Amino acid sequence: MPFGKLALILLVVIAAAGATVWLVLSPVSNTTLSPFVGLSLLSIAGLITAVLVRRLS
Image 1 (cartoon, helix red, strand yellow):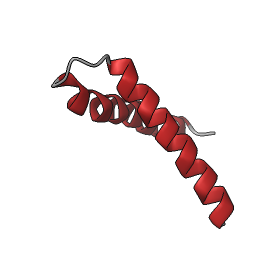
Image 2 (image 1 turned 180 degrees about the vertical axis):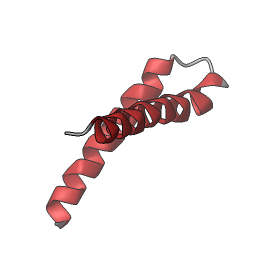
Image 3 (image 1 turned 135 degrees about the horizontal axis):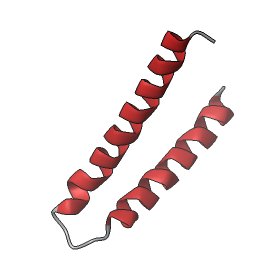
């Protein structure tokens, strides 16, 4: 695998992780809830989405 392609994949993965954390912390930061509550809700939503995509395809 060329280094440029590997660097691009790593950059996309790191950016997606940062966007995920920001997406979870934005609504939770205004409340007294723990950030882990938002991350767990996002994980559950991702699991449900993955199951729905598998069933529909």
